[in-house]
Length: 155
Image 1 (cartoon, rainbow, N blue to C red):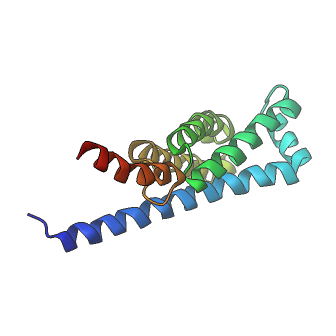
Image 2 (image 1 turned 30 degrees about the vertical axis):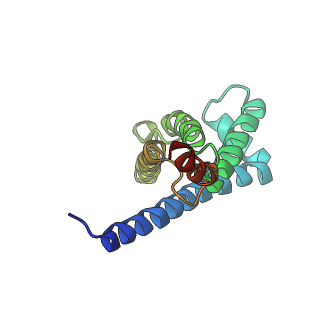
């Protein structure tokens, strides 16, 4: 049986780990969305180089998903939905832009690194979907305020 101290320490570690995970995952998507906006023409050119049709149009939903879902993930608001949106964005983007099996030999290692990194990101996002925002997210802020009222109502 665990003592209250062990439970408290485990809970604190879990809370801070969830926050850290959200911040670190969000940082990548926020940075990428920002870079798409700031270097719009270069990113459209990159998309065209990979044969993306209507790249001038598709850049906008891509950067909006990264910025909006990244910000939601960072704040811990609608966290599971944000993480799901980023999973659904990251998988096809990875398969299109980091298809290491179809690039010249001198680019294979670089594209393999990006491919595996993106799937590791998907793994982190799936963990967020499974466990939610944690105590330090806006999702939990409402639940924490409601909980004492529920306890009193049930008493």
